[in-house]
Length: 325
Ligand SMILES: NC(=O)c1ccc[n+]([C@@H]2O[C@H](COP(=O)([O-])OP(=O)(O)OC[C@H]3O[C@@H](n4cnc5c(N)ncnc54)[C@H](O)[C@@H]3O)[C@@H](O)[C@H]2O)c1
Image (cartoon, rainbow, N blue to C red; front, side, top):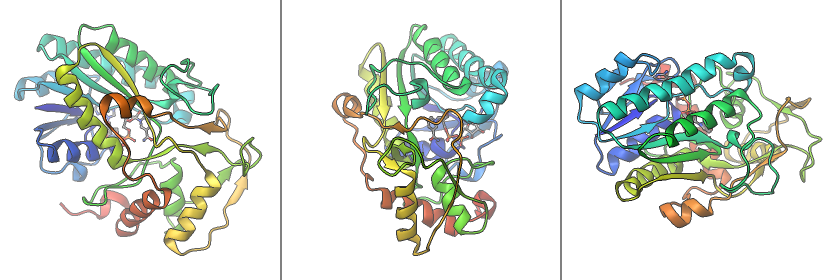
């Protein structure tokens, strides 16, 4: 049985579907502060908090947990700057509590959701795993500290450093529903549905069209990487780090153009000033994950990613409030 913390969240719910389809039994542990019970499909779930050791104990005592996929965390860069302690408590102390319970129960395999935010300002055009880590936000710092907590223990681990998760499952009624929503693709699409506003933060970056370049990786591809990582850990000792990205950069203007094409709507977003701390370009090298995990993104095309997200948002413009289980 794989314990999936944060399994009711955006990436977690897709990961539970991928693990289940691959034949793994899953148990979700989520406090539902940001997650949605409607997103948990056909697996047992415990409402519990990683900051409470007794909640974690309940999960380990009730089911035969053999490995852990740990996604539960706060993940808003801006909020982390405002409330750093909140981020260190949830993301670092929560991870420490989870590792303590793993030790107590003799569970020695963990796949951890880390982030490209651990790298900070990039020094190279594409970022590989040997790039120095220098987080530029408390969020990124909390992820790096959690990685270090993990590697300080006598367990096997894979830390997956995701770039920009986006899209939605093409086969299950699950997608992205954050409140507040800060990610580019959902904000853009929800603005077309009259649910939010959308603006481009800065058009004077040192990029071909002046807008920030990011690496958008389909959430179903990310989910599949967790299956690969859980399998990999069955026979691989030690601690491992893999970047998960498409390996290609797309600018904000290119995402807007893809959305206009997919939705058949004309979009002329307001351009405002830069946001502090936004690097001009963040693009992954995904070679190591390809070589060692045998993982490769399937939904490479930006229009496909936007199309799948659009399908979800159009069906459920108010997110999981509109989903009947
Ligand atoms: N979305 C991205 O683009 C992205 C990029 C890099 C890394 N990540 C990381 O991936 C993970 C999942 O991200 P997401 O976008 O799915 O976020 P999400 O907010 O949708 O999911 C996180 C889930 O964890 C739960 N949770 C949070 N704190 C908890 C706690 N103390 N106890 C129990 N449950 C708790 C929330 O209720 C939520 O369901 C996070 O660790 C995030 O830092 C996400």
